[in-house]
Length: 147
Image 1 (tube, rainbow, N blue to C red):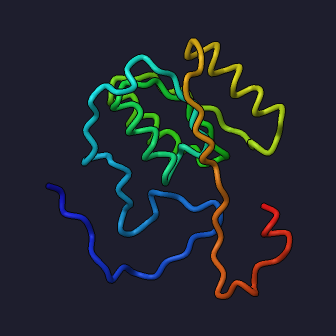
Image 2 (tube, rainbow, N blue to C red):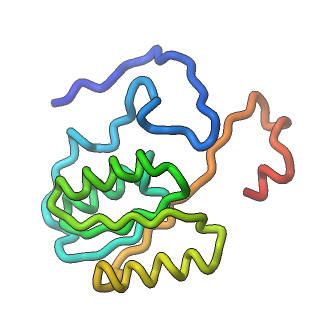
């Protein structure tokens, strides 16, 4: 069994968008711990926000379960390429599609690319998110709530 880091962790904050490679301790997305069983064999998945965090963990798990994955992400190219390598190491196809999912056209482009390059879409994981930190809930602006 893998030994996971234990608190206390160093305080840290990164400007947006944060980079997985700069986190200490490094997050565990299942790179070393998750073993698949073929439960998604032959499936094709689109995962938004799959460059890091929960999205990366889902991409790894789905690939190890047998799915090919389209990784939709904003502009964290190094993180997305790291996720792509992990999916490919599981023997699955990984397609990178950078862009902003706030654009309806970009969302249509993602679907079209999934159909053309993966041969269809069986699973959609809408994981893309925006994360910010505030000292108090009172510090969150109306505009931030709208994101």
